Every structure is written in C-alpha cells, then in structure tokens.
Amino acid sequence: MPINYLTDVPPDILARAANIRVAVFDVDGTLTDGRLWYGEDGRETKVFHVHDGLGLKRLKQNGVVVAIISARISHPVALRAEELGIEHVYQAQDNKAACLLELLDALNLTTEQAAFVGDDLPDLPPMKLAGLAVAVANAHPVVAEQAHWQTAKSGGLGAAREVCDLILHAQGKDAAAVPSH
Image (cartoon, rainbow, N blue to C red; front, side):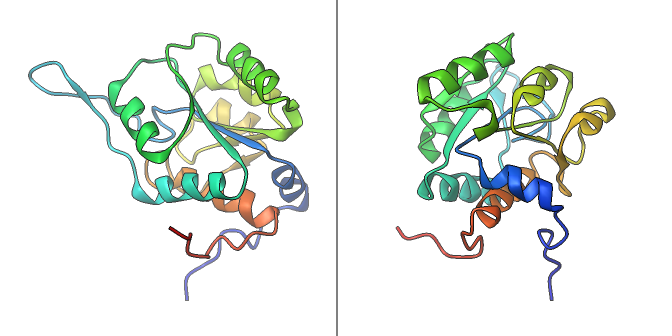
C-alpha cells in the first residue's frame, strides 16, 4: 500500500494550507528540475511532469487560483501555462515579491491567502510574504530552512503535485478524486 505523505503534516501547516486561495509557483527548479536545455538552434526546451499539471488543474477546478512568477522568460513556460489554463503568468520578474503583491491586490486577496513555492534565493522574498511558503525537496538549504513546509519530491518530479494535494487535503477536498472533464 502506498505511503500517504499527507498523514504526517503538522496541524499548523494544514491550517495555513486551508486558507490558501492562490498558489504561486516559481518555474526553474520548482515546476522543472532546474536544468536548462538548449538545442543546437538555440531554442530552449523544458520538461514538465504530468502529475504536477493535473494537480494544478485540480486546484483551479476547486477554486484556487494558480499563478506562475519566474525571473526568466521562456516560451515553453507560456505554452505549458496556456495548456493548463493558467491565466496569471509573470515572466522576467526580477522582484518576485512586488509581483506577488500586485497579483494579490488584483485578486483582492491577503498574503495569508497565498502560497508561494520555490527552490532558490530569488524565491525567498515572496516566500517570506506568503501565508504558506513551500520549498521543494531539492531547494537551496537556506530556502528550505525558511519554508513552512518542504516537499518530499524534487522540483519537476512531482513536487508541485504534493503542494496541490496538500492544499486540497487541508481544504477538505479528496485529492484522489478523478476530475470531471
């Protein structure tokens, strides 16, 4: 029988996750494994995990806004976001905290209602603002230390799905339910 990683979540983390209305994800190292791939023609490619995609879709289906804030510009990110129906995509963001605050203002939400998921030092400022700060398993040690919760899986390998399942679980939604099409 598979191990349920949600059974040992501390009550304070569940309380934080129950309050989330927007889940914001960094890209490189969080939604991907952090490696940058370039073809001989200079075009960038990225690999995204299908489990993460379904988790993001399920959040949206359950009324949680999903957003992406990245310091880099990447066409594959725009394509993946469009495929998943993610409307709030912010690339080339040197100040991720300011971007998060602008997003929250536009959505009329508080910082306590935001989750931010990241892996490296540029993610610390928005993580410090968020009601739920999550570091992926392969996050920089300083980032992991500052996070409220850390995933068991690494970025690009199902970490985002863990975050989605945590939020849905804390909000009383069955994370194992099959979404309707």
